[in-house]
Length: 305
Image (cartoon, rainbow, N blue to C red; front, side, top):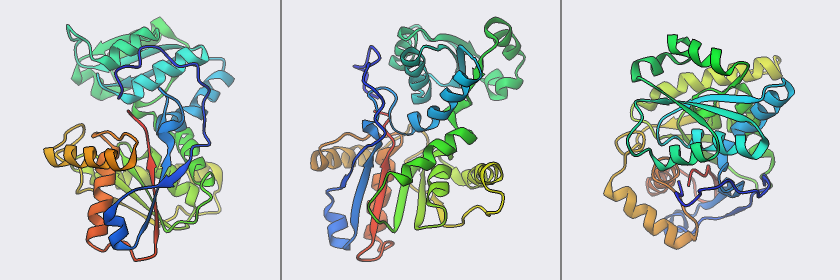
């Protein structure tokens, strides 16, 4: 995340983000056409999948007459950052329930959130694990109700609908589409958007990310039950779990070196929590011959800079 963002940009949301080639000697050697969907260009602070997930939640909050948004996140949460920015941009009050005690020197993320007017409430890690079932949640509800509750990471059925729209914006034919995974919402949206066409690959940024398979299956079941009960959720997807580099928000010198070289070649930024792990994983799969010569791979840049 770019710590220079101290105020919310008044720039309008731009969903018509470009698809451009990825400069990769590895892809060239493998005979694979590699493209990137630049959703990092949607908005300076509400970029990538964060906007996609929030879009219909914001509309639902407005339609329901809610003036306040409440959500959960850690001290470095891109989701908290985006909700705070969206609240300022679209006129909502915001409440962020933060995991852990308040630090003497809050993270740049939390400083930005407070500069947007977000009220931060700090919970113990034990209480945080229970989310809205925690006893402390009653106090938040009493002080701020009525509010529209957005889950941690922003993933729910409305988020899946927002992410599904990404596919319709891509005019290029493709064989595979990829994204990084944290909660599975963006991946579920891409799967729904593809609706059985092509192969969809998620790259878990979490150690032990195998549990995401069940999470995505549940999201897809709910999505199709709500939107088209005549269809079964597609099976043209899988999750790669070997490129987590130690777990969420962790990295290695090899990943940082890859990031630097990738950015120099391509002229746009990526970050080590999500996108760098995906791009690294794709190149490794190309080296292994996973993709066939002549195929096209489109990777989603989910922002988070």
